[in-house]
Image (cartoon, rainbow over all chains, first blue to last red; front, side, top):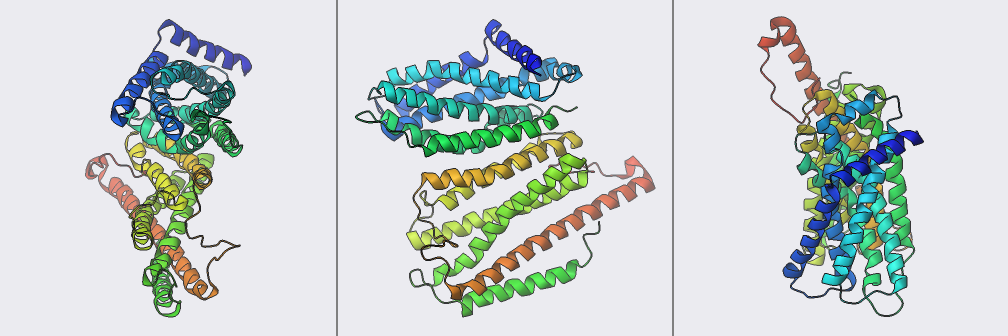
Length: 225
Length: 242
């Protein structure tokens, strides 16, 4: 099981390294979205809940691109059939894809969050606020990665892949947006003690856990053929 | 399974209970002190919302059974349940909007968690039909739709939790235990309306199942009589086919 996951994950990352597709597209899209926000909101800087909203919308929409591409290569080149022939647990594909998507999202944020701080963010958050923001974003990434893998696996089998990924993914991810935006709003407000109410990371963790279990239970039915 | 049996009796009971429930709501239940007559929409809106949400979970139940057994009939049951709940859901959003306009002066109120959660759930389930429609292989369509129905069924309570935490408590809490809640004099009418709405869902569900089963049986009989060419081409559909 572990070997299969490592092999599949290695394949994903190697593919992205040799012919970068998902991460550059997501990063470029996120920076363009920040520029769009600058003109659409007509503001030079944002802070507080507006900043949290802009950041979450940018990351969420950029992640939709990555989710849409996640299974595309396997589907088109016959990788899924080859995987099904291999005598390994099908959940291995779920773990590998989720981890790969999680890694892509972290890479995206390594580019998009500094860009956001430079381009739009008014107050500069303290080191403590930044650390809390990282925790919130990692929990949100886990949720997006899990739900995204499920949605990507469903959407790749349909004839309207690019249409269905946001249609299915965005409503499913609204709880993540709520928690992440609520949690990061005080962290991006600047000023004194930026606190993180414990319930938002807790709800995010609960969401991640429930959907991880669901994905584990249901993924086998999505790669059957 | 024959869904047509006792359908007429069920329909009559439904009509009687619903009419009785609304009659009680209009004539026997007391007028609300703040909202006056507009509060009567509560007897339609709340039972409809509860039945729609339970219908989604009912659909998830059949979806689980479909995945466990591979019986496509279960997929049909899930499909009909979700389809009906979507129709009820549209009714919930409209009546909720009317009620919000009457009691708060706005057609849409964002700081009302129950209505907002319901909208999100509705938007999610609204993709059920496009998802089915875009998968051509019927067996695969059934399997993927079931996975979606289960994920969405589990999403319902999580979503309500997240939205409720995020917002102030302004929605009239029907079953709040500490403050207010439903006055005793409104209870009989409300429970009768709820029962009527449940019966309405059951009747419509069985009616739709009977109709789908009959048309499928008719199709297979036609095929036996005249072969494949006697059948009219079905065209692509979101509904399950056998």
